[in-house]
Image (tube, rainbow, N blue to C red):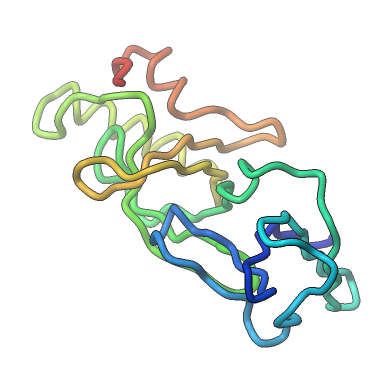
Length: 173
């Protein structure tokens, strides 16, 4: 199976991934990936593929900017019904650990019976999987990045929506 990551080209010609799920800064490629790419304009989206022979190739991609913010992550802890701590795989051996707030929902506070039930539901659902897929956006006022969390089958269950469907959270804008 080929490993793929989408990056943006910067003025100095270096390909870097913007990582809003971890920090507002830029994370460069590790040393084993070419440091400069030629033939691409600043702002171009490129894709790096790692094949079965463990070799990388870089080429133009038709994928969009939203692909820059989609990650695989392992959940370290469920904080409450709408917040987790996850170790996010940034690709090429880079990882970060972040608090993530589920985007668009608000679960009851953890010190209430409803809050404990919401947290228990999330713990139970995520216990079924080894990893989640998440998309992240800007941070909330507490510094937690907002995320849509998908888990389970190939199509993925949308955890944010399941909490709403089960009556364990309310829409929050």
